[in-house]
Image (cartoon, rainbow, N blue to C red; front, side, top):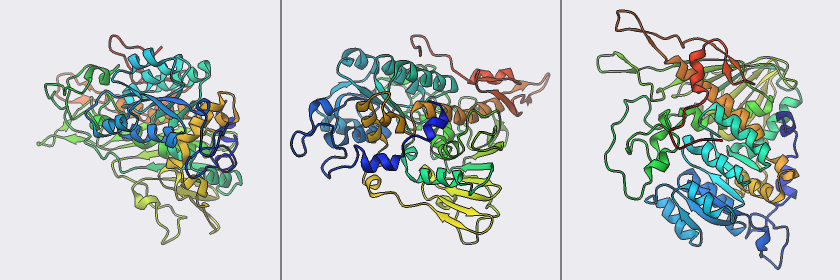
Amino acid sequence: MDQSEQSTSPSRRQFLQTGALAAASSFFIVPRHVLGKGFIAPSDKLNIAGVGIAGKGFSDTNNSFNNGANNLVALCDVDWSREQVQAQFKKHDKATRYKDFRQMLEKEAKNIDAVTVSTADHTHAVVAMAAMQLGKHVYVQKPLTHNIYEARMLTEAARKYKVVTQMGNQGASNPQQEQMVAWFDKGLLGKVHTVHLWTNRPVWPQGIPVPPPAGEVPADLDWDTWLGPAQKVGYTPAYHPFKWRGWWNFGAGALGDIGCHIMDVPFRVLRLGYPTEVEASIGSVFLKDWTPEYIPEGCPPSSHVELKFPATAKNKQDVRMTWSDGGIRPFRPEWLPEGEPMPENGENGMLMIGDKGLLVCGLYGNDPRLYTKSGQKYVGDPKPESVTKLPENGHQILWTEACKAGFNSKEHKALHSSFDFAGPLTESVLMGNLAIRSYTLRTPRANSRNFDYPGRKRLMWDGVNMKVTNFDDANQFVKREYREGWKLV
């Protein structure tokens, strides 16, 4: 399924209102075979394993469990000391418990239908690939992967193994996104030439010196499995359980955290493909004497990225897309009337500008508003009741229903963040990180303490072949070298 087919699939709203999610109050779904009021036949329950069950994994597993509409048969987390992990163990006391997903998949392969993957970014790909190779459907948190190569490999593997997939950018199942697609398709925006994306992230330590190892690893933590394919470093609470996101060894910075949510809207509305150019600028880290500090291991405190996308069949105009993090946001657009607020008071948002109007929305596609050059205003419809009663727009529940229906089902085609869509979206998000990391590459000047920065240039991108064509040093960031004992395929 290509991206244009994905965007014209049956509407989320129609599926939610008339399909399997038109729910009785005691269950979010109505099973295919009802044997008495409120009873779900065992054959109608999906057997799910959760890998990473605290943090975002806490809601991913519980939403997929869906108040007992499905079974959680195995729970896997590297750190059993966390409060949410213990809460899951207590709630799902019949589920088998593991710390290493590889052991779980080996021992539970016959019992599992599907797997949720809500680990740190650097292990998304290895967990998801191992599950798909066993024919298991997968739900994977955003960003889909840690790097561009992994995203391409997972996208291709989903087709190869014919499994139902969904990325955890829950705004994709927000029916207000359909409203924005409809506005664009009606020509209200005209040809879109500029898109601005911005966020208040990072909201964790970033742009700081590398922390020293803390020493002894906590007894309940399997640190080696947490590291997975990443470069081996000593344990420190500066990485786990949350602050890993600001370090390239594990995370993907502000773009990885929120980019797949905010870029989702223009990517879907305009039916974008791979970008062709990317350029970045970053905020500097300074020492006490105001000497710029070079920290290649860490994401910068702020960044500004510009991507260029070629014209598409739906938008016959090249698109210039900018991304800003660290609290930097675009200036107020000319056609936004006085008194009309920027999304989320400027903290997170999307602004799309065409030759006939402009479109704004907040995180997850919320609160869409369109303003035409002629002075008309359009406001997105409120979410239907069938969606507002579901957690996260029913994003995980829709995936479980599609898993039950199968790879070639209309339910799978109706998913709006299967890997056919989420893979190219993630690649485009991670292009920003490729430019950011290339920007900080440096070369010592002869007989000098100063450095040249050859990566500070606009990078030309061959999306099909996943290659920067005008600066080969940047290609080291397309994929990573896995440490010994780990592989993707």
